[in-house]
Structure formats: structure tokens, C-alpha cells
Length: 126
Image (cartoon, rainbow, N blue to C red; front, side):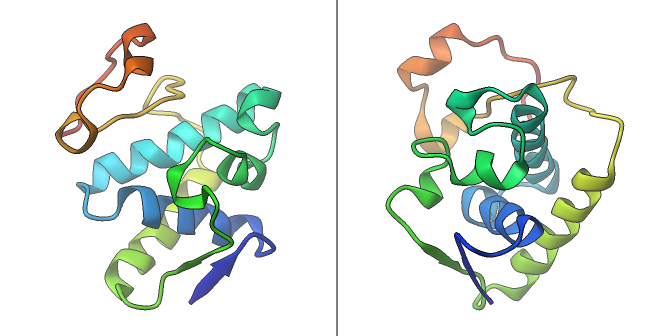
């Protein structure tokens, strides 16, 4: 399954979860999905506005789309299926277990980039 920038919102959402968080614990992937949905709910232009698809694709927001026009989800089918399931659940959910989180970071992968200095750690899912 190859997802492009012109794919529908669910596909782009799932591809973003897949590319940003596959290999993370399931709860970490769910929290990444909520960060995306929360950004869309906040409707800030610097995050891409009020749709999940626009937030996922907005320049500089998610590394997996920076300079990339498509994400190939065909090799890791379990990770793909899980990302699709998480995307569907979060799109349809009303209760946000992250309490509005709009950023995430895995310090085991990235350390603590400078932007994390302005963030409050809400929950450590790793």
C-alpha cells in the first residue's frame, strides 16, 4: 500500500502514524495519533489548520513527509494494519486520553531537541 499526498485523510493519517511511530509501543503510537488530532482540533495555521490530513502533511511538522511525496506501507503489514486501526479509532473517539497533548518526543531516539525545552512532560510512554 503506497500512500501519497493526494490519498484520503484516513490513509494519510495511518501512513503518518506508521512512518513516525511504528516500532514504538502501541500506546506510544496512539499518543502520536492524538497529537495529530489535537493539532487539527486547535486549528492553528502553523500546524496545518483544522484537518488531520493537512496537519500530517504540513511542511516541517512530521519528518516522514518532509520532502517526501509518498509512504510505502506494503512491507510491514502488521505495522500497517495497526496504524490503520489506530487511525480509525482516534478519528472516531471523543475521549482524549492525552488531555490535549500537541507534541511528542522519544528521547531514546532523538534525545531532547531544543524545542522540548518549552514543553511540559505530561506522560512518559516509553
